[in-house]
Picture 1 (cartoon, rainbow, N blue to C red):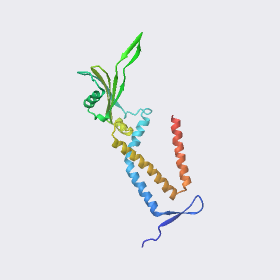
Picture 2 (tube, helix red, strand yellow):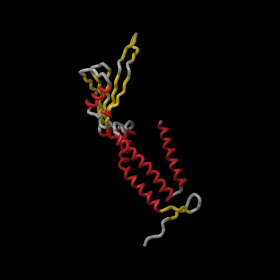
Picture 3 (cartoon, helix red, strand yellow):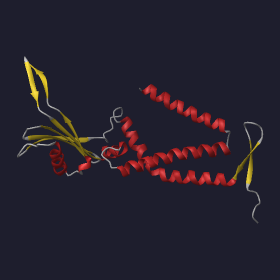
Picture 4 (cartoon, rainbow, N blue to C red):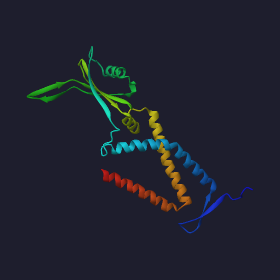
Length: 223
């Protein structure tokens, strides 16, 4: 036999009057909370592990975050005339997509040198990033050589670079943002469930404020 009751009452802890809450709202909040938690669970485990490694790699001397570095000086048949030529050459030489190539230019300038001044040509620098490898290229305009610094991170460092979003395309960034949004909504839905079923809204928001104040104090103390 189907029950005719669609609401239930909880004693209020703020004004002494009964609080009426729809059972459908509670069921909806529970479903939203559960599905958001399921969506964010694996991503949060990944970010928790990599975040722990990043936070404590210097203090605990964790060997999981390491990289192999090498410097290569390559001879060029002819000098590059334009920065875009260097960028296209770097993308082909490093086997990286051109959008992952970031080029910066420094104009020609004079610097003090002994009793006079020294004229420096333009300097073009390139940073090429992928999660599993990255490189820095430096080229002085007119030179017939280019210097390349290659860095090959190990598995732990590669995962940490995923954590920081380095060298990643927009889809991964949007996925990480969606996980963060799911966590925030899960917190809101959990707070609503707690205040409706176990305590007053004033107490719930007081606990949230206390947690935020503690996090802010910890951040300021760390700085």
